[in-house]
Length: 408
Image (cartoon, rainbow, N blue to C red; front, side):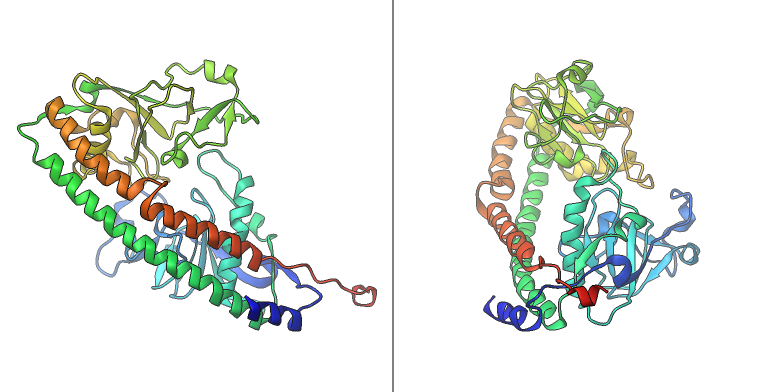
C-alpha cells in the first residue's frame, strides 16, 4: 500500500481523469441465431465453446467447459471472441466479468470489449473497475427476476483512469486478494464434491425404497406472476436469487399485496428454484410471513410419507437432478422447468426411520460445507468482504481538478 500511495502522490496528486466506457473501449453485444431451441445450432463436428451468462464465474474467468457448444452452422450467426477478451454479463446475474481464457462464441446477453481506444489502460485494471462499477449500477437495473442493463446504458458508466504505473500496482494488490480467495474456494469445492458423493451414496443404499411421483406425496405451487411493487418496509419478498438465504431479503411488499396470495408458506414447506439454476432448495422453518415470486416453486410435502429435509436432499442429489433435467426447458432464456412438470419427478422414498438416519448424516456434511457462520464458507466470506473493502478504496479516486485555463 505504501508503494501505491507514493505512486499516487508522485503521478496524480491533483486527482485522476474519469472516462466513460464509450471513451475507453470499442464494444458490442454477443449474438446467437434464433430460435434458441433449434437443435442444429448446437454441437456436432467443428463445434466451439458458446459462452452464456451461466458460464461466467465470479473469479474473472469462464468455467472450464461451457454448458453449450455452438455448431459450425451457427457460428457465422454469432460473435467470435478470441482468448484474452474482456466480457461482462448484461442480463440475469448482472455484472460478472471475465477475461476469456479460450476462444469462444458469445451470447447476446453479454457485452464484448473488442479493443481499447486509449493506450494507457491495463486490461486487468479495466476488468476490476468494470466489475466494481456494475456492482453499483446493477442495484438500479430494470426488471424484477431477470435484471437487464443495455449497451446504451452502460456506455455512460465512467471509471477513473490513473497513470499506468498506478493501475499495475492496484492490479498486483487485488490479484493477491483474489488468488487467496480462489484457493479457499477450490478447497470448498472439493469439500462439496465429497459431500455430494456421500449424499448420493447414502440415498442410493436405501433399503427397498418406494418410488413416488412428487405430485403423489406433495402439493406444488408457484409464487406471484405479477411484477411486485416494492415498499420500504413490509412483508419480505424473495425470488430465485434469495434461495441460499430466504430470510435475508431486503425487498418488501405491502401486507395488502401479500393478503392476495392464495398459498402462503408454512413450516416444513420446501422452496425450489425453477428458473436458471434449477433444483436448489431451501426449507421454510420459521413462523413468519414471506412473499415469493414465480421463479420459486413451493413444495408442501405430506410429512407422513416424506420429511422436508429428505425431500430437499433427494431433489438436490444426482437422482433428483436427472429427473429435473428430463423436464427442463434447456433452450429457454433463462432455462426453466414448468410447474406442472415438477410434480412428475419420480423419486425413491424409503421409510421415515431411514429418512431420519440419512438426514442426520447429511446435515453434518451440509453444515461443514455450507454454514456461513463457520468453517471455509465463513473464511471465504470474510476474505470477500476484505477484498471488497480494499477494492473500493483502491479503485476510487478524486476527479482531477482542472484550472480555468484548462477548462477554457
